[in-house]
Length: 539
Image 1 (tube, rainbow, N blue to C red):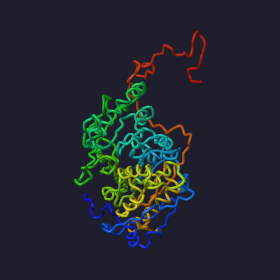
Image 2: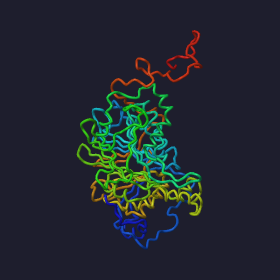
Image 3: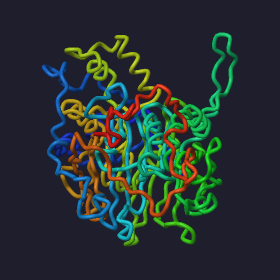
C-alpha cells in the first residue's frame, strides 16, 4: 500500500482552508455530530503560518465540567432481549454493532468514562442465538463493569486485540483472564498484539543500554506467572469442556501465521490457557497478506464468519503501537468495515486505511492548555509557559492527536468514512464544542448534504462515550445510547453444551473439591456438639 507524500506536517493555513470552500466555517453542528468533507488541496504550503492563542472562549465555564447533552438525547439500546433464550439483543444478519465500553484518556478517567475498550459484533447465528463473531479492541481499567452491564459475558470475550501495552489499554485483561472461567469462558483466552518494539534503552545510572523483551508474548508470559495464585485457587471449578478444536484447526480457521501455543503449562483448550498472537507491527499490507491478524474464511473444521482483521503501525510513545482494520463480508455479499487506530499522532497509515470505510475510530485529545486547566480545576486557561502545559505538550508530541490535527487528518481522507468517531477524549458540552471549532478550522464542512458516494447517509463526525452503541448496515449508521441498570448483577451466562471435563482439584468422581487447597483447622463449623451455628444452605 503506497503512502502519500503530498502533505507534510506544516499542513494548511486557516486562510487556505477557508479559500478551499465557502462552507468551511458554516457547517451544520448539532450536539456531538457534524457533517464533514475533505480539503481539496493537500500540497504543502511553504509560507504556512498558524494563528496564535486559544481559539475557544472558556469564560464562566472553565472551572466546571458540563454534561454531554448529545449522548443523553440518543435513542436507547437495550442489551437484554428476553424474547431469546440467551437474552442477547439480536443483530440483523447483515449488521455490525460497535459498542464503546470505555472511551477516555487515563488522566481524565471518571465515573461516566472508563479507559479504552471497543466491542465489535457481526451478524447473527439463528441456531446458536449468538452473534456470528465478536472481538474486543483494548481493555483498559474499569471496562469490565460496562461489559457486564451491557450483557456481554466472558464467553464472548475470548479474542482481545491490544493496540499497545499501555496500562489504560490492557489493565482489565487481569479481570477477564482470572474470572472468565468462573462465568462462561470455558476455552482459551487469545491476546493479539504487537511483537517486540526493538527499541534500545539508553544507559541509565549503572545500568548498561539494553533491549527489553517488551512484546505481547513476554507480557502474557509474565501476566500468567503473576496470576498463578489466583488460577490455582479457582481451579476447583470446571475450566474446560470436551470437543474444543485443536491448535491446528484454530490456526487454519482463523488464518493465523503460527500455531497458537499457550504460555506456561496449561493444557490446550483450558480456559486458563493464555495464548498470545504476536503481530509484526512494521507491516501494513505493502505486500499482500503481510499484515493479516485474523481471517476466518476456513470452512472444513470450524465456524466460518468471513471476518478479516488487519493491522498497521501508528505513532504513539514507543515503536510497536498498531491500529486495526476489520472487514466483514455480510451474508448479502457486501463489505462492512471499521478502522480503530487507538492512540496515535496524526500519521499517513491511518489516512490510507480509513479511505472509504464505514466507521473510522481515531483518538483525539484536548489542547495542553485545556487539559491543564481542567485537571488542575483552574478558573481560566494557564499560560503556555506553565509547567503543566509544557509537560502535557510533551505528552502530546510523543503520543497523541490534538483536536486541530484531527481535523486536518480528516481533510486528507478521500473517499471519506461514513462515520468518524473521535475517542480517548473527555467529552462534555464545553470540550466537544471547543473541539468542534478546531476541527472546522482545519476541515471543510457540508451543511447536512449527502455526499456523492453515499446517497442516504452524509459523512459525519461524532464523539464516543461509554455505552455508545453504533449500529452499522449498508443502509444506515445509527448511534444509540446503552440503557442499563446500574445495579445489574451481571451478564447472562451461556455455558457450553455437554458434560464438563474434571476440575484440576477434584474428588475421585471428578466433581470439584473446594477443600483441596485450604486448612480448615480453625474454621467455625456449621454444626458443633449437636448445635446448629449457621445453615449450610446460606440462610
